[in-house]
Image 1 (cartoon, rainbow, N blue to C red):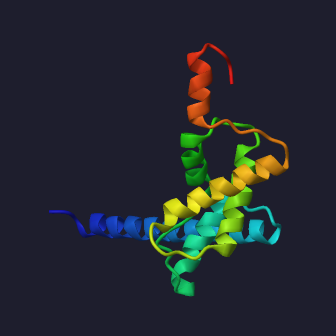
Image 2 (cartoon, helix red, strand yellow):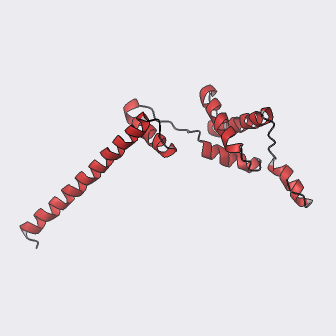
Image 3 (cartoon, one colour):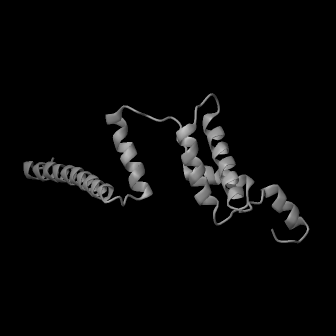
Length: 144
């Protein structure tokens, strides 16, 4: 059996731990707000702000078009290129403003962003190699 003093210390310890956790959350939010005001949010900060605002705004997106996922899907078809990420960002931004969904939304939205990135590359005289084309080059011993 524990003494009343030990129970008191245990309760006090739990209470302080809880307050410390809550204060840490508040300080993190204030720091994010400050970075937002300075227009210095990182990608992670911006995503955290969106998540924090879901409940208050009453919006819960079921499908999310992200640059990283779209880039991953693009790399299944295209060979990596230094400008690919930048053009995928532009494609995702365009799709997010214009998209209307009717079925397999997320895959189709990513595919559309990849198509736009490819078109932007053509407009900027950048050549992306398709994976199947690169495999042909590599099978003949050439470099893409």
